[in-house]
Image 1: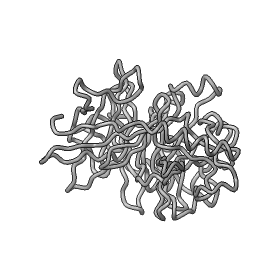
Image 2 (image 1 turned 60 degrees about the vertical axis):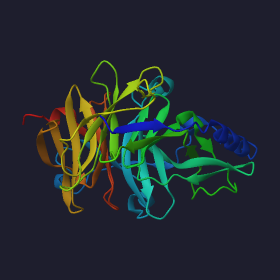
Image 3 (image 1 turned 45 degrees about the vertical axis):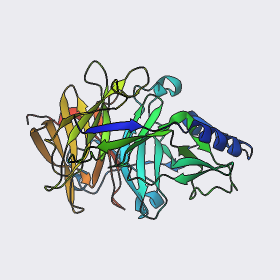
Length: 348
């Protein structure tokens, strides 16, 4: 699309290595996402809401967080992704989900590793590494994190009009108790490796990375991006080619990463997934009404009303379960929930 592209910033590997070394000297350091798996302190609870209309007419199963996370008004759930087709299952015997949260109190953003098999979860603070006067440190990554994508060894975190940040999951760092670093109570941090910065030429509206997912329908996977928008805003859907060799968005010959664009997105989209050419889109309908799921193709969606709980957010397809998974954001009504693909027909 002329006028829109992404550029990749320089790699923060040296800063991350310095930070890992500083933490290692105190008994922490680099453990990777694999090192977190045995250390998930939170307990998930399988749950059913008082009525199907409250939980969503298409919800087939749901889990909720421990009480403090379920009620917290500082942290709000947003994005969701899965480890499917990343090699995680081969190493651990089962796949996991990951969700994102943003802070309304200045603490940045975080992700949660969610193990449904053992009904456990744990939080990881997202940070930007830095070295100041030779001293390694970090600052919280302050983005909305409306969508996340786990592809290969990378976790991509949506940053709305700024593009998205990319983290290598081998860089998960354990912060030991008593550390001087401010983590807002988080035992793990994940630093940003580099950013994919969104650029728009004059007269072209900057693409908002409100949410995204990986579409594996074609011969090569693509990054499918969507914009949340009202009737007065753009509601575009964009695709970026992914390089199979790097698992990262593929640049053109001039080094710029350009999308294919479709401007026929639906109102107030919150998440998107695509399977075999069919799109599935979550839509919020105020804090007082259950959400919808649109199914079909851009410009010809069929709406499933009251399909989700209040406040549905990002969406991911989990091939092993042949179901779509999402999260709801409102305090006291927060679920990680699934909807079977066969229950979401594009034809009715």
